[in-house]
Amino acid sequence: GQSKVRRINPDTFEVEKSIDTPREFFGEGSTCFIGKDGKEYLIEITWRERRGFVYEIPSLELLHSFDYTTTAPGNQGWGITYDPNNHELIVSDGSEYLYFWDVENFEMKRRVTVTRFDGEIQDQINELEFMDGLVCYNIWHEDEIICADPWTGKSVREYDFSDIWPANQRGNSENVLNGIALGKDHVLITGKRWDRIYKVAFNDWPTLFDNDN
Image (cartoon, rainbow, N blue to C red; front, top):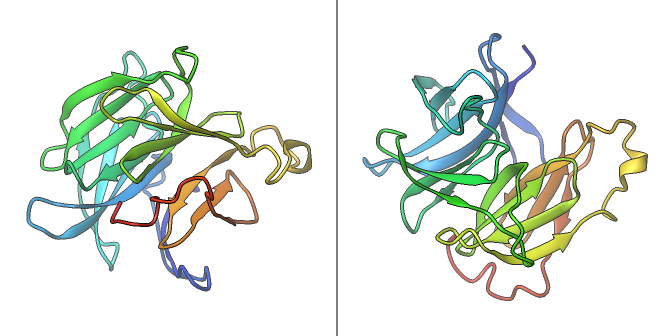
């Protein structure tokens, strides 16, 4: 009963619009995407309820809902992002899989297994952001951000953010890093119940802001 969808001014971080997700749902990931009609929409997925919502932009009017499946038996929804190059949504559910959905009917087109530099399979994939052709994600209860090839699932970039706001200063072990958002010339990093947002530059990634992501 505490989930909300908000429109926030990117310059001042003031809340311009806020709507409540229906009380019976636990809202998880959300992202903007371009529909087959060329219009921009916001999609939100839920944790355990297998229900997604589509909103009009910029009013945030709820347009419709839909049901989905991910990894059985839980079929949970954790993170979601949009790949504009291939016109598909990418979804995580806490497993080792990334799911790729058609933007027209939200049905699965394919899925890939995610692996790290050392070849080990990585599960607990949480928040997602599509950045410069890669799917970047955090790992639940870890302070790392990993960027994977969307076709192979193999790790291409790995970053340690444990020093950005040390876990022992957050007050609760559940106050994890789980927010990644791509800006025009920076990346925003935040977390669950964090009272702060960090602007981060990836100095080793010169092409990150060179094109539309």
